[in-house]
Image (cartoon, rainbow, N blue to C red; front, side):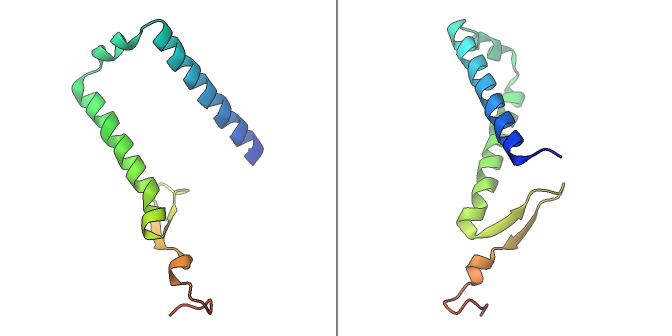
Length: 90
């Protein structure tokens, strides 16, 4: 099983590698390569990014708990919504 420290380290490594590729692309002026991508692909990428951002903010906005460990995410109200000063649901 992969440990949490390993996941953090691998995530940091991937972020640094992607950042390095972006810097290299900027230095060597490789932006013209994106001209070869069709409009539907670019639109799908932007739309998908927007969906991911909106869904990731639903938890904070509506107090939902989103289980992303399964193939079909399930949403449930956060227990914090029902918290009262006495600590029991209404």
